[in-house]
Image 1 (spheres, rainbow, N blue to C red):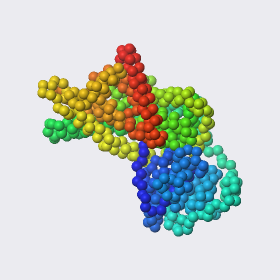
Image 2 (cartoon, one colour):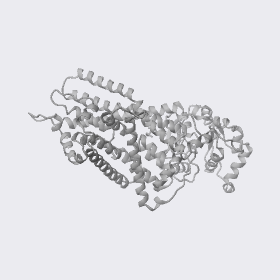
Image 3 (cartoon, one colour):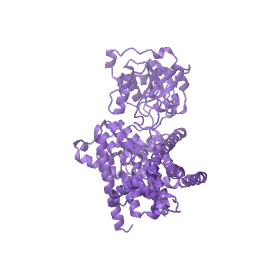
Image 4 (cartoon, helix red, strand yellow):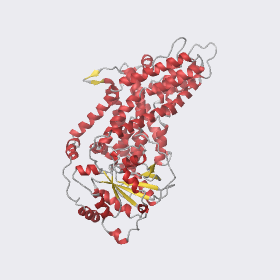
Length: 623
């Protein structure tokens, strides 16, 4: 999903949060620091260590690191290596922690305690946060923190991080001088003791070694993980998601569109005619408003993704899709990064750090941009709204069906690329079984959903007020200067720098049905896909001649474009790599320019080919 901004605080002692995936570690980090990090129920969401400021009960300022979840200190993936390097003092530019808070999932102590043993052997001071104690109690597992502390020889605090229980006690414990004293290094004899035997002894002493009863999650999984019924339910869920993106968003989109139109009219009445009037009305307001109108659809998409994450359903979806993914040379573990890419390819690419197999990780990175990210949604919504009639087909909206088809096209394109890589790489033919922890189902927490939606809204608005606005203004500048010569009869933009640039690009894109306005809008769209909408709004606003005024963009392009051109542009956006930030993320994750260059070339090639075929077939069919 979207990247969070984390402020780094270099002063004070360093405390590291360590734990297995799904132990509630990130929720504890949020509660202790007030930092609104993303909380989810699947392994791999914390792909980078995140830092915040923790204030103890006595007012001491401490640095708190949220390290990626790991099952052991023998790293199998890049995100686990981050944790191991920090704890061992090998992390570049970061000192070794002064204290470790080891977060244990009280519902699964058998596995969590093994990591605690490994951390304790490092000789670092350790405090234990016994988390999810409420869930354990509901399952009949009553863990006495004092008894557990006596067994471990370490201070233990009972916490329910998602409800902020036990956080004050943990803050108070960090003020006790003795917890900062380093544990003695592990003795050679202790290192030879089987961790499994040690954990079993502890659990027997705590009377926690009995078999657990069948949980409600197990009964639900009999249906949701059924090869047939589970797959049908997953397909229906995804289908309903894309239906909701259009049906639920219609009313708020109309409000935003009407509000921006009213704002443009009011500002236009106040400002005198001239270049500044054009800059504000045609550049700033038309550009920003053309993108802001799609915020409701983006938030609806994110709402569904957040609910699926919070409920614990996503790992089940990964298991269901493991066989399908295996047919193209991947495993179900690639599903979560790819699903994250529906929101934005950048966090999806970062989430591949949880994939242990290097070959699977690189292939997942290469196909992540083919997932239809939220930045494409404004373009899809504009074209679908302009050219696809709003009618019901069998109880479903036609526009929602078309949107669903575009998402499916991106998925099929990604699977096709992965299949080709499987056929032409020897390691791609190897079968790798999927082993993934399935967390218990949870009711989505309203606060986490609200935080996630607020973060996404702020990121989107900041993009509108930042790079999108900047590029829109740059396009307005290029489209307004130089002024047309005396006696010119065409629109002023045709004589500008942008006009000549668009005319040149139109020769390249003419075979796929793009006019000069579309060709010109694709250029700023290289920085961010949704900029193309505001760019089209600016170009058409400046294309009016005489007493004509630019109309709303959707009806305007519906009058001036053919259906074949619109379908060709939709096909282009399924594949085209119009996001410089994504290429930068690939360069950062792969450590060079080779793979970003290959990605850029093959995606542009696919986009041109898909648009060419779509345009020619549409013309043949009379569109």
